[in-house]
Image (cartoon, rainbow, N blue to C red):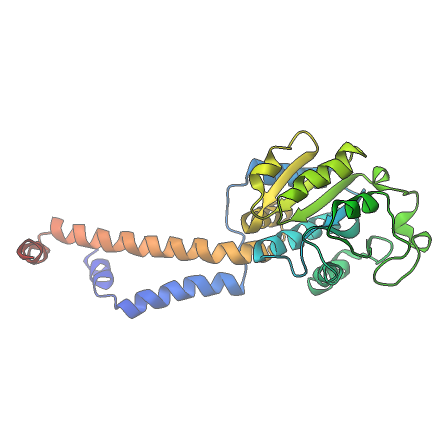
Length: 288
């Protein structure tokens, strides 16, 4: 016992710093699926995907080019992985206030960079497709809801030559809608265009719009996930560690290590006092 006390007491501040750095760097290099509390929103969100295995969704992509923020970027990757894993076909449709002409490239980048199509054996035009950007106003969403495109974005083929559209004429023919956004006005728009007009339920991922989105749960919105934490929870449920856990785990490990060392320091201090070896320290404190 005394050996442990002496080791902690004599620990150089540089060693303390190195331990904290190591605690942060290891999870960054190797995402660790630490036990975590899953919110009811993330659980409902993921259960809905699993319960719609093999179906088709419209992804109303409202995010700007490269994910707006790291949190929303992580959400998109995690949810796309979960959809592909559950054999859900995805029609990607960039539209709305916060999307732009680069949104198509971002979503194709997600699928290619994280090798989702390869991992799950998905084929463009059959299992997923990216349609041209229709942007900046709610009328763009209305056009998306009516499948008002002529050709797709990547291959410029007409819808009639893409098997994913077989039997589909508008959003009322898909099974549900997925959407992402960082602008709170989008919440009302997706409800009006996809749920009110066509009765399609919606899964949402957002940044800074949690309250307005939660208000619609049960009346169009099935559930919503928020930023990096939401991504980490979906990854945990999906069993596929990704950006969410890469961002959140280092913080958790770092704070855990910090508090362990802090507690150890306090244990040493009070142990020394209990053993009568800390009197000099106490006297010094009194003098000050």
